[in-house]
Image (tube, rainbow, N blue to C red; front, side):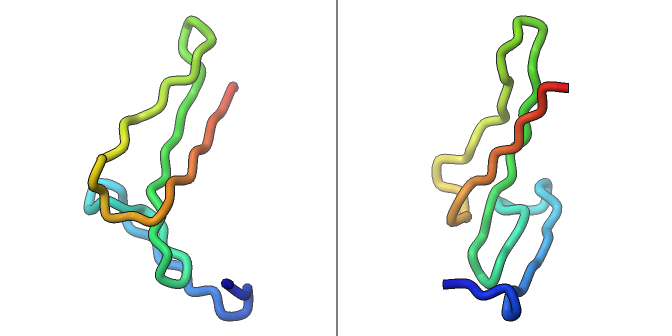
Length: 62
């Protein structure tokens, strides 16, 4: 369990590795998506063997 008072956060530019954000040693890939002209979300691909523990998806409709 991660407690806020002990949370260690590290950011890494997505172009420099498989993960973007690390919370107390847990690595996350961050993916963004937006609506296309057909009102469908377009997301980036994920690496099958990426060096991350989880994926965070952020979608925007504006």
